[in-house]
Figure 1 (cartoon, one colour):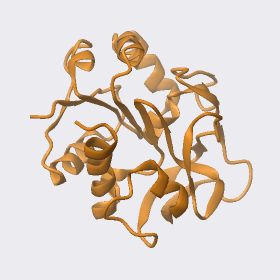
Figure 2 (tube, one colour):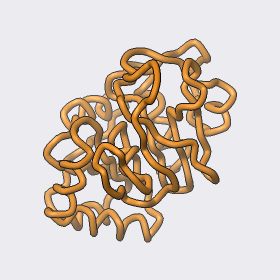
Figure 3 (cartoon, helix red, strand yellow):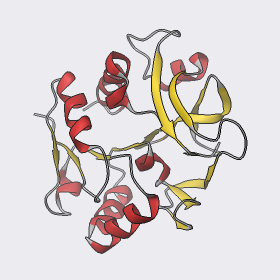
Figure 4 (cartoon, rainbow, N blue to C red):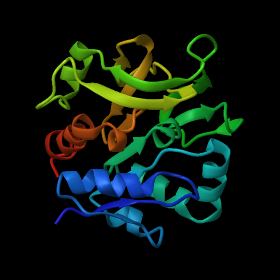
Length: 204
């Protein structure tokens, strides 16, 4: 049985993520102690909430050290929305550093749209190169709800939002995958991305 863990940093969307993983017959559970993040096959850093509060909570409750240990071991980590943004060097929302795993700054939209809220397509050519597109089509859409966005980081495999070409929807580098859209709210399309990430990319 695949052991997938997430962490509760006081915000997040854990209930929705649990439901999303159930769609692909995987039991996602919340870590109860930091050590759970080391032994899991996959760790999911959830989205939704304040970047500042999330970073402070993770630091104050031992999650940060465990995440850094897991990262140093190059074990699979998935970040969703805010969880994806926290992987980068600097978070403008928190006015402070992120986890520092990927290069670049997470900034707010400076022009229209000031908030990306709704259903968007992915750049299909880029998406196919990730190995996450099995069972999906170029017309499939994904649900976004973000005011801040990941950078176009060098050395990272990036899938832009089709409607916003300079804005990444997916950032991948080795054992790290940051998804800006919400797979748990993206219905069948989101479930297939999770399945493909686990089976095809990570081979779990």
